[in-house]
Every structure is written in structure tokens, then in C-alpha cells.
Length: 426
Image 1 (cartoon, one colour):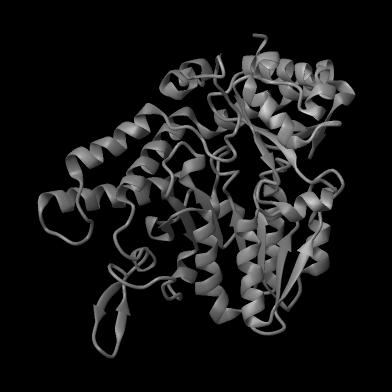
Image 2 (cartoon, rainbow, N blue to C red):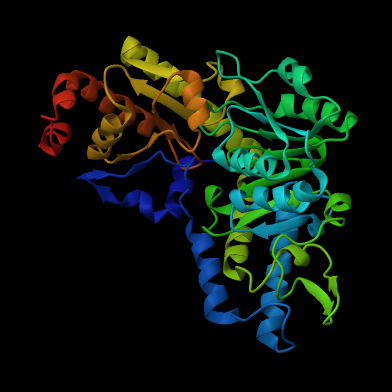
């Protein structure tokens, strides 16, 4: 059974003492912590199997190649891809979406074409398309959100037409927590009727809920290993095989080719043509271990755990903080993931974040790489608490109690009179 208290034993960092208190890590939307199993897998690779892949017939190279290919297969199964050939390892989501923008976008987007992007996108799924539009003379068309922070299919219906080439949409907002999967499925069908592709940002969704790329209906999906218990520097681009086979590499060089003459090149099979140079083999090994860890827990259980934490947070906020705090995004926990962006009224978001750090509570403050969304909401920034498999209700209670103390000290915090001793009670 899914037991967050037992899960916590796999994460030594949660025993760290920060500012005199046990660490409460609520910055999982930025990056998750790593379990001992993932760290051990990476260490085993470096200690016993380290070699370059696809370049040698000696034992170590063969072992490393097998581990690397097994990682592709594990990720493919995790998202129900048709084949591991559809799984391309990148550095992160940012590189994954740039890869699509350059390899598919440059040859297929022309002057006068339109690229549909939502206002809630992370910059990673917005700026590459804006750059492509500028290069190719295309137009960016934005889809707005409701005042409750949701996307509606009606808004997409208004803008998707015969000029549309790309629809870029997140599966879950990294600020509002809004889950958009049901809308994305409908959007995919509509976009395909007009011959457009759909590029989904799954950075916040894939680590937290069951993901089936066949059911989603999108053409490309990007997500990052470091947000799902894996190491930094390894990400995934999934794409439909029939589309990928028609594309030339984003980067060219070692291991992207079958043959090269002075006059011609024959590109490698999928996915290797898109993984130029020496790859992050250790990162792939770590990502495989992370995928196996999450699979053992069950992604339905992961989703349910975070849903319960959000419900509990809303309950405690209402009971203890009332009008002192403003929470953004859908109010129904069924419509959102484990991300809660809020502000304490009368206090700058950075002030609140620094004050929470005095209690040993790690949150994110700022605009979270989603500036247009914050401007749409009329905000200069928010405090973001984000949950994962090892967070527990007692930590929510500690967050609420810390915020109560912060609201009581609001006047002094505004003038900078509060120091660490006041917040920690020493």
C-alpha cells in the first residue's frame, strides 16, 4: 500500500535540520528529491559499468548500451508509448520542445501560419514557439483562461482553423495546478482535423498522475526526469513514430548517423538520430530507477495522495487563515494537482518565502517561469507550495502554523524588523 511515512525513509534529505527545524520540502514543482534507490543506481553505473554506449564491442560498452536502451524501454512503458523508438532523451522539457520547434517547425511552419499557445504556459512551451514565429513570419494566437484559472474547449474552437499549424498546451499548470487533460484530448482531435500538431508540456503532470500518450491524442509530449525522482540533466521527448521518422536531427554529430561520406549523410534510426554525442547514460539509468520506483507505488495512488493533501490544505487554510490568504486556481481538488500558489495579503511573496524558510519550510516564490500568466492574473508574483509522494498532512499543519505566525507579524515583516529569532521562537 502507498504509505508516505514509509516512503520518507527512502529520502535522507527529509531528516535535514534547517534553521533549527526538520526540513519541510514543498518545492517539488521546481524539482523533486531523489530516493536512495535512484542514487544507488547511478552510483552502480559509474562504479561498475561506466563506458560510452553504441561505440564498443567490449563488455563495459555492451553493458552500458543495454542499460541505456532499457531506460528508453522503461520510460516507453511508463507512458504507454507504442515503442521505445518514440522515446528521445533530452536534457529537460525545454530542450524537448525546442527540438520539436526546430525539427518539425522550421520545415512546416510558413509565413501567415498560426501557432496557438495558452496564456498559462511555462516559458518552455511558449518562447520556442514565439521564436519560431519570428523566424518564419507566423503568428502567435493566445488562448485565455477563465477567471477561475481553467482552460475551456470553447476558447480553442474559436482560434483553431486552417491556418493553425501547432497547438502548444500544458497538461497541468505549474502555477495554478489546473489539470487540462480532458480539454487537451478534445483539442487534439480538433487540431488534427485541420492538419495541425499538438505539443504538450507534461513536466507537472507526468510525475503525478497516470499518463497514456495514446489516450491523450497529442503528437509530442515533453517531461523532465528531475521532477519525478530522477536526476537533473535528463528529460524526455515522446513523439509519434510516423512523425519522428520524417524529421532530421536537431543536433548532428556522433551517433546520429548510419553513414557519412564527403557528399552525403544517412541518418540513424529512431531514437538515436536525435541523441547526438555522448549521452547522459547515468541520467538515463537514474531515470529508469525513478520510473520503477513510481511504478511500484502506482501512479493512481500518487495522484490520490496529492489530491488528499490539496483537500486538507484547503480545509486548514479556511479554518486558520481565512481572509488573510488568497489562493489562485481551481478550488475543486479534482481539477488540480498538488500545486498551491497563494499570497498573504499585505505581504510581498518573497518576504513570505524568506519567512517560511526561517521555519525550515522550502517553497518557491516569484513568477515561476510563467510571467504572462501572472500578468493575466494581475499579480507580480506568488508563493508556491507543491507536494509529492513524501509530503504528509503534518507538514501541511506546520505550513499553516507558520503562515499564522507570519500574519501576526505582518507589520514587522513589512518594515523588516523581524529576524530569524522571532520566527523560530528562540
